[in-house]
Image (tube, rainbow, N blue to C red):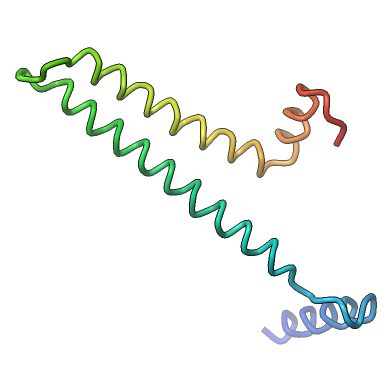
Amino acid sequence: MMQMSVAFNLAAHSLAAQAPDAPVIDWMGFVVVAVVTMVGAGFVVVMYSLGVRLGAVSDDVDASSPRLAKTGSYVCFAFSILAVVIGVVLIVPPFYKWAMHLFGVAV
């Protein structure tokens, strides 16, 4: 435990030595990341739960349009999977560099 506190103190002192009046934490960046995380997690949960609900409705024998509900279920699952894949691509650096290379953006 003592070694970690020494490492944190050294890191804090080196940051303070570089720019004494610059804030250590970019609070606006923190807020942006927090909001995007909450919206993204909410989107994945809503799409997955809507897909499960539409899948259950499509199996109902009294449903008015089971084919439409089944299609909607697949679309919701596809959006949920797409959001997770995009999140992984944005987080993992080799995947991010590969994706940016596909779009012709230099990283």
